[in-house]
Amino acid sequence: MLRWRLVLGAGVIVLVVLLCWLDHIAPLPGVALFPLAALISVLATGELFALADTARGEPPAAARWSAWPVYVGNGAMLLAVWGPVLWNAFSDSEGLSGTSATELAGPHCLPPAQTALLLTLAAALILAMLEEIRRFEGPGGITARLGVASLGLLYGGLLLSFLGLLRIGYGIGALASLVIVVKMADTGAYFVGHLIGRRKLAPRLSPGKTVEGTIGGLLWGWASAWAVFTWLTPALAVSGEGAHSGGCPWWGWTSYGLVLSLVGLGGDLAESLLKRDAQRKDSSRWMPGFGGVLDLMDSLLWTAPVAYLWWHLGWVV
View 1 (cartoon, rainbow, N blue to C red):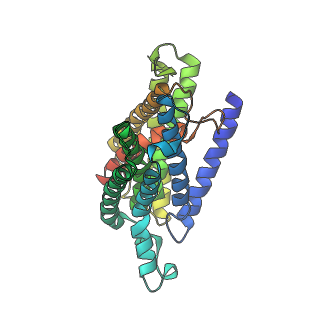
View 2: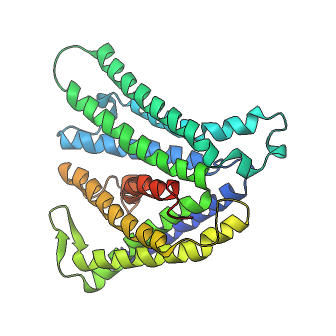
């Protein structure tokens, strides 16, 4: 299983790096990554509904939860984030050929994207409630269904949208910094925990996590942040995307690496909470060794708003 996990993990890394590179060189920022985000949203939302059904002791059937407003809302939130880039690209009479990537995307896209994102989230929640009104036949399960729908909109839509905000606001380097730090922290915790882990961190939720592994993950995340802001983000800024003012302060990348590593652990435990409630080991079984999309994305979903805060406040560059 470890060998398969390494092989599959390497394949996922290669695919993500390739898509990030294609997105970086594409004339339209987001053209390679936003379709991937839409696919992730659909799969993650379906897994969340399946876990909720299982926790209630029912066979997986997302339709019971009035799922379609959630799918529509999550897709609309991603489109709302990407909307300002599309507007800049196609409202100019010169089109893509006469506009640079830095003019299409950047911090100037964030205010309209944030406004559109919040309005879309509100509209999706209202739509979910209207669907319950339309289908009402009698009392029973309405509040639970709306609760799951709300969680689906927040988990598979709003949190995921922060990855898009990082991409369009601060460039591919900002998005890459989040993924690299969080996933390297996950990897460090896994290997250190397997090598020297003794004391269980949360045995009821995640028996494999140890205190030693957590410390190892923090150190790996910290070292990864140093590497990212020493080499990667300056290189991408020189190539024309992202802002770089001559060096990220040591306290910026240090806090970024440590906080993201710790919050990513919280995201992992939160998803474990949902799986334990459903008495499931993985969110789905379509990817042996890793589980499902939620198993891959849990730490990234929690850390995306935190990473966005660091970039928004200028603590990292």
